[in-house]
Length: 591
Image 1: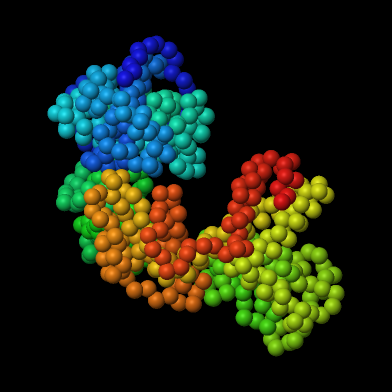
Image 2 (image 1 turned 120 degrees about the horizontal axis):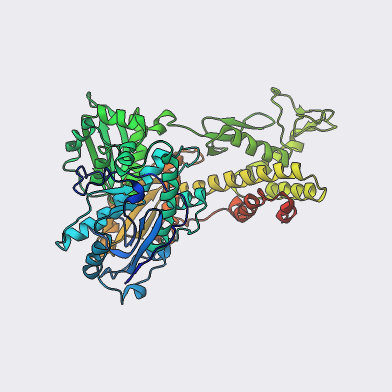
């Protein structure tokens, strides 16, 4: 355990916006009238074995005490959690069981931290998380909790910064925005130091708006109005479990659907006023009751959320405005087929692609590489296609000096279909070669446009082929470890979640798997490109089953990608994205 006290200037940095803790309404220390410059604050960060403050444990505490813009002390220690640290947490934080084996337990650390921070205001990035763990451990150890006020830099950032300036308020994103000197590393003291800089930058943003005291800052931040607080009883009885919640209006209509790792904690947050979105406040004001569905794990919750939104199209879910969003690239059934963009797929389609312009770019790139026609002339039953090559601007990709017969044209259709299905990446190779020729000719602006178009094409094809491969499998059973030594299971049939469950630590997993498979939903595939599965659901499932800790328990067919899949060129895309900032390096993109 390390505690240091010193004087020195706090490094300038970015900080997001502060929030009065949701359950705090009194001010026994008289903080409200104190100038922020004269107030002692302790910026704290925790590392833990998981996200549930009831079941998980603290593995590290880092804190920085500041006053008047200067750092006056630091507190840092590893904590022995008394249990195994999940592999994914070790990967994230770098804190191993060996590192904490000789560390003091929380029974020794927490009293020392309380004394270090006594008489100050606590500040944290996502204060609800850190305060939840600290308070829960103080309660478990029968320690008094002397801190009545806390500030949250996440709330501050959402209030002070525009969404254009800060699309996300993760600490790493804010550190990049403000270019702080100490970078977040998922280690407690480093993250606390980064938060100090972010906090100072956020205060700078509101100083010219007359926010100089603690009270002025908490008044400036969103706080729950009495109408919202009066509805907190709607969250009574909700379990501290993962699941889906549904806000319902006066007529029982579904207003909003959301998912949560902890239903009780997430739903209660709607009544604190911490969410700055006006429409969410309006939704909560209309709500008369809250229904919920408990789920075995996060994947089941996310899938149920998608299905409920699709079924109810809630007025306050943004996704409901475009429940069938996405565009498909389709080979037409004409005598001389071409690629077109459609809202609905056919068996000869790939997609969906979220942006129509992107879909058109991919279709044009494939057509250009194969020499597939891009004209929209109605050919009917004609046995020839002939677009002249006189005009190089906007000409048909199948333009030629001589009329083309169907036997001349069909190999191009076969090449495009093979590229779409991942059977061959020959067309991508042609586009790559063209890029090299442009770079060699020093036509860098044209090459840059071609590079970006090729990168978008590879990404779109790779994604569609990944999902298509998943959706062809009749049954796939995947397991992932939970945070408490047990297992989460998912039974997937043709890209859809057919059953979900789990086995606690000490319970034999295979009987649970057998029961899940026996009771799983029957899925009848159709002849579409994703066998009828929802693209969003299939994408959620694919991400879940391809995490490093996932294990395939059983499958009716192997999860494989075609030999010519665009996935083979994803590394090229990474290089292309980096080269986008440095055009002279275009020549290095040649394969």
